[in-house]
Amino acid sequence: MIWMLIILTLLGALLSCYALYVEWRAHSNKKYVAACDIGHAASCIKAFASPYGKLLGLPNAFYGLVFYIILFPFAFYGLHEFVFYGAVLGMLATFILAYISYVKMKNFCIVCSSVYLVNILLLIFSYLAAF
Image (tube, rainbow, N blue to C red; front, side):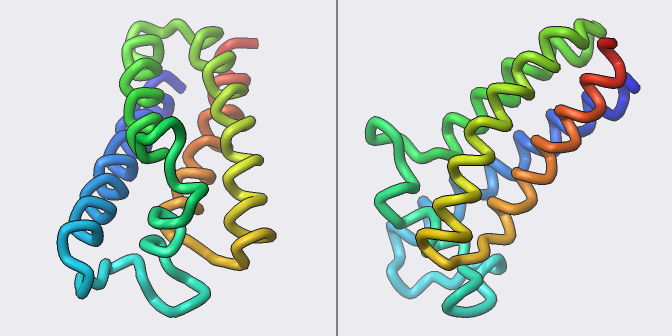
């Protein structure tokens, strides 16, 4: 179980880094097309560039990266309860951002959805490991 939590935190961090890279490239080059942009209604750049893509002036992916960096040592050292409580907070962000993306923006972001899946799996596996 510990390895699954470690892998999930690393995967979440990698996805967050990719999101930051795509956002940076799209900001610096308006003609940049990311691999995760597959259409008008399925665009990660559309999600990242929206007013909902930032909180307090920083990209949501930055907060995600910090989140996974914080959870990694807890997962690595087998402190499953802390990973679980962090995953509960992560799910709160997941619900809010998924609602905004799918319902308000009517957009499917592959990277965002992958992060949502990582957060769901983190919650499930940390619960199974902790309790």
